[in-house]
Image (tube, rainbow, N blue to C red; front, side, top):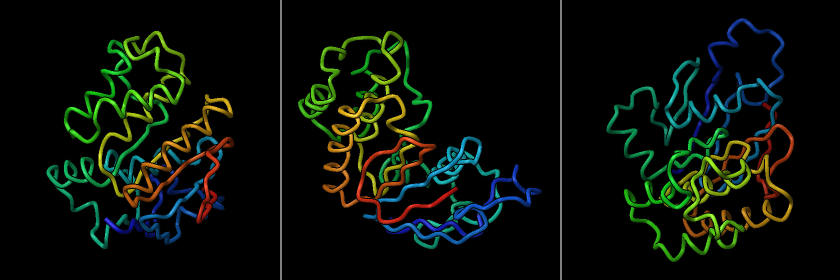
Length: 214
């Protein structure tokens, strides 16, 4: 996948609003593979909704979203399976980890399906992110910041053309934010992928090609 296009896209819930000043909603936006894009938003502006539309979890919007000129509304379940396995990876704002499983098990669930990364690489990422001692800890017993780092590792154990990150460092200190950025950028560069980051304030320090106000 080389491009994502948003064509006059608007959440259905905003249909009757006449006070929108967005650079995304009701506009045509082109995001190309290998670009780093930041979407800044106030709370309630629809940033999580936007990522859910792109990855096909929700369809309550007007306008069109195209992947390489293919309207995603025409995709069948089998198409979305392929897209989510090979083209898009998403780090959710609410993380969606399994609290009853360990940190490593949460990552291995995806990696066992993709076979994308050796265990050694995964363990190295845990160590680099300061949670090497949490491999066998249940996620329910970890802080939200620690869980964010687990969720990032899980997002990286698959091939992707675009990496979608919804407030990925909201609960991280500067040092861990920087380490997470470095790990993420290395993987993004190795795959020649693009990055879409959303933020309501604190955001990853990346060499952004474009910044949009939602």
